[in-house]
Length: 391
Ligand SMILES: Cc1ncc(COP(=O)(O)O)c(C=O)c1O
Image (tube, rainbow, N blue to C red; front, side, top):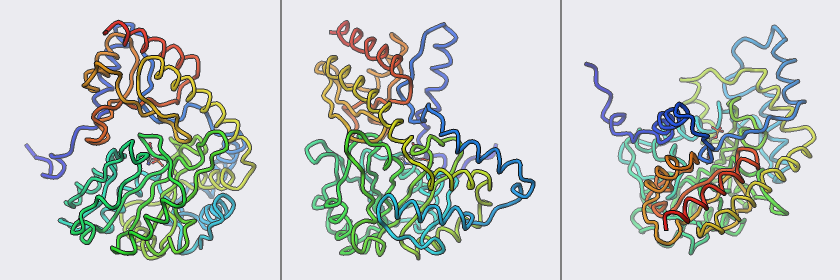
């Protein structure tokens, strides 16, 4: 029997893969399952984006391999988007790279930069790809806990000096999955100063930067003076334009890192389907007002979840951005894994235990807002009734 490599054998099973079997079992038993666990947008992209995809796919010239790292038109659209949205200048030829969804780029950055034994700074909780990427390269990692008392931002002063000196990459992600926390420019300025001091690359993962509520507008780390010397930012059309299944994203920033990542990727993939890039150009450069209406739908859902959690006795902050509410279990409950499993079994409501995102998530659950508001309201009613019955 052929065995997997030691690094692959050591990978933790992916939580959602295990959940799939449980959900199928419940569905077979006729349980009305409501899923508040995943982060895949339920709403479609605007019609004019889909129209462009169809039009481009009908062009016989659009079906061959497209240029490695993205078409010039897509990279120019990324640059136009960064200028319009953040007033950041990105040279499309040297400072932007197309990705087959940002997850691919996040993962491959590890392989581009890390040798076994290198040190990586990871937020805890974290988006699982950062950890898997580090583990599969044989890198070591140090967790930066994201705690409520620090507004779920890492405390750079708490990182030991020797770890800081060794570190090669620091992962940051705001607006944050899973905590829903946001970061302002003064935080990013601190991060950039820290990275310069210790010669660390900041990899900022920002796929939720256009999912914000009320008047809040998330900034880019690249707005900080000199950030491009020490940072790359990963971004995506998945959440911003409801295009998660299309698989298109981008890395922008430090030209040398972009060059290295582009070279690495050119060995293993053959770019993004040209009609998807053409449609992405339209998404990034056309009228953006539909996003405001879409964000109002998410905001209404967020409010229903927030109120439901408060009514059920959870400790929770009202997030200003992203697709998640991060809540501490009500008094009397101590094990989120059992909490989520029992809740699912008894009520059909599926939510995520925080610990799958790292040890600092041990007392937390994550709820996402990517299903219709009436279903969310029904789920919150079930959660409240169930919590009360357990008391
Ligand atoms: C923090 C974070 N980064 C990256 C991604 C991946 O997005 P993409 O669809 O661009 O691969 C996700 C998806 O859920 C995410 O939550």
